[in-house]
Length: 317
Image (cartoon, rainbow, N blue to C red; front, side):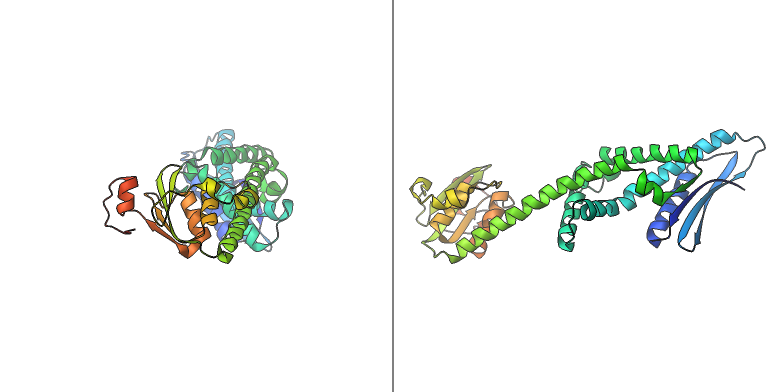
């Protein structure tokens, strides 16, 4: 047996160590070299582990330079895949805590969640799972690491993985840093949004109801009609605009005129007629007014404004 390469790393998580070893084994099995049998052995020592890549020569005349290149590329592919799949979450967490100085567990976990959303969205799939391996961004990061690893293994056949991760992946980390920055922006926007929603919830809570009911009719897209309990249109221009000017003058991504009108009218009940209950503005209204809201997808009012539906009458004004 001839030892070709080695990968040393500090002993840590058993699952990660096994993941790296399995990925190395899988890549080596894809080599299909007729002149040599290439395999990996995993050994643990106090404080560290090492994966040795060895070859058993099956022929007398073996082109060693060519064999070394093919094994080196397979090993670089395996380690790069391992870093992206297994180490990337820990690197992201380290950036969040050490470079962006978030230390509260809830904040760190929330930002990590936004990072994962960003990584999934870049994959192009509806759930981010089916096409994650083919993500251009992920493949670019993996390719970047593979090139670095191949270069290092060409110069030093034994790779210190801890040193590589600490000192040789700055360009790779810069891409992850941009993902974290984006995630923090999303986290802060969501926090401001939730604080604003809480303010409106409190305002609604302390207000007394002025009219029995309001019918909010979503005609599609961003077109809404607001009717009072007598099914008469409510003219927003007749309402007190103080709330809209002082409270709703925020950079919030929803139709603040509708919300301000509903708050100004202060109905005891809000009947929302829509074919799309998952629309952001409708979710926002339900969040602000909570148990005052009822969503209807088909009733006589829906029939009049939204066209015929297939469901049974849910709400008869």
